[in-house]
Length: 331
Image (cartoon, rainbow, N blue to C red):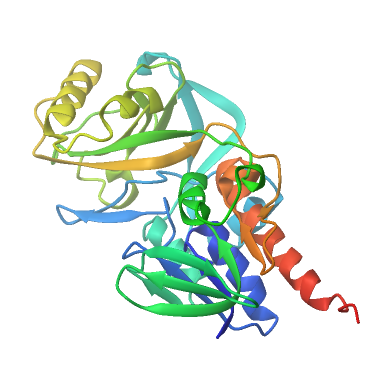
């Protein structure tokens, strides 16, 4: 039996698992995806590694500041560009004073792999049933495997937490509601096309289609003109559940062509992120359910602030569990 089963191998789950395992607890992480890291995602397309989740790394607080210093020393992050933004027209870009961006030379996935290197992680395992018993949990996965654990941490987007706990949690015991912006990530290759953009990664604040545009080719293949473009939540919401995203990609490609005077691309791929960015947060470091057997939930929806919030939530969850284990039991 596990001391703690953590569902979700994103930054919150990984940091929670690190702390618990360091204190001698028997911990395992389970993730439905083949990879780990959540939106620290890198995909191999046309012989290039593309960060199609989080395009660049930014410091959001003390945890990301310390981790940035460590990852830079290890060569897993390197300085990339000053932070640039625009409202609607990319030509009207400006620099955000005092803000900087980093990129991962080996891809964002390499960061997640480094952080999780000492953890036991079961990939491709989708949790379907979470059943409370007298003094432990029984977890059943879609692949048929059953696992028992004394405590469970759900390091997942809040809607997935609600789905897994719906059968035994009352409405009154549910976490505060959090809303998400989805995103469509369009990866586009133009071969050796030379366009002298004055920025590396651009954040658009009021464009109806685009939220961020990243010059991915500049990271690892300077001779290739490759873009990763993330849509706004409002645009993605309208098309997220379409079975065929090819017509949507055509619409986006046409807009890029107009925006930057681009030719037809040599290739493209599109990926959907259902829970890309929390629009609000619960305001709590983690959420503790009022179950007889410990059950907690954590993630960037708790604290907000992206990477910083995810790390802080995972660490706070681990601290709570460790403190509860050290408390003397009543006679």
